Each structure stands twice: as structure tokens, then as C-alpha cells.
Length: 116
Image (cartoon, rainbow, N blue to C red; front, side):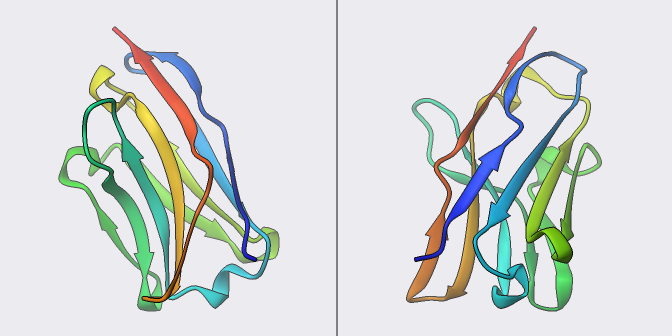
């Protein structure tokens, strides 16, 4: 069973920064797609940023220029650097790893709260 463990969430003032980490229980090179999603209260889970095949990246329009996704193969870790945080970024952030359509894994989530 693949495990994804997120960390790095917390409470920060608007304009501040946080870095989230997602550590996988096996090599992240195993996953054609890996990235970050978030879910705010009363809203659907949405894509924040992800790596796709060939290490291409996708970002939600709302975070482009503020958030950066990166990865460290040696540490089996994917990061999300979040700068210029806004209250609208408040959500539970989840790490997702996709091996195939039949094998999709989620972490337990980490709370990010941005105060105004």
C-alpha cells in the first residue's frame, strides 16, 4: 500500500509563506502524475499544482506566480512552496499520486489557514 504523508501546514498571515512537503513510501518516479489539491469548507476539491508525464507542470490559475511545485527524487518528496498567501488559499491541502487510473493515492491532508 502506497503511503503519502503531508506536512508543513499551519496558520500564517496574509502575504506570508509556507512550504508543504509530501513524502511517499516508494520512489516518486513511479508515478506519472503527482501533485497537490486543496479543499476549502463547502467547496469541491480542486487542483493546485501537479507534475505530469515528463515533469511538465500544471498550476491553477489562482496560484500561478505565487506557488511553485518541486520534487526531490532522493527524498521521495514533492514540495509546494506557497508565497504571497491570501485568505482565499485557506483549505486542507492534499497530496495525490497517480500510478494509473485504477491506482490513485491520497495523503491525509494538511490544514493551511491564512488570516487577513
